[in-house]
Image 1 (cartoon, rainbow, N blue to C red):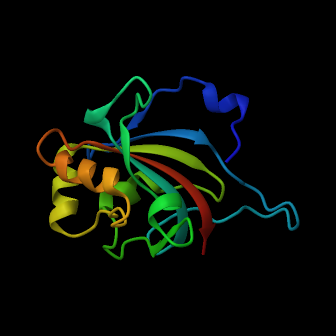
Image 2 (image 1 turned 120 degrees about the vertical axis):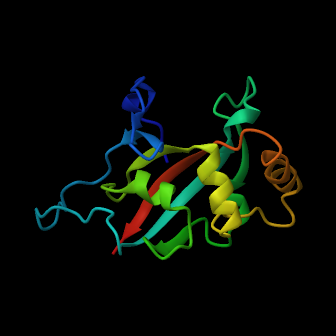
Length: 160
């Protein structure tokens, strides 16, 4: 995704009652230019595809102030995306909660608190790095010895 001037604005995170917080970096496509109709938004039951980077917030560095990456769809999937049905239990419910209302081409950074991350790990809902991603695997394992808060950087590529 190309960087746009509005991507650099310092907008505060929106905190949800569950403890999930998110920041919208880009609204995405709101109106279908060809038909003039509103585009679909993510809601329970939506079939979605996203490009995603997951960062371990407690492992922030000067080069990675949001935390070092343990997973990216570019490095850890075959098609540079993850696709699933919202509400299926495949990914953490807190992540899906933070994605509600997103449009195609929208970008959000969604922060899941440590206790949600531990629950998602127990339920097998966290994307895992490929075996060839040694750094990602090491970071993933280290994550659960400390504050496991994760930042999910999500770009919506499809909604049905």
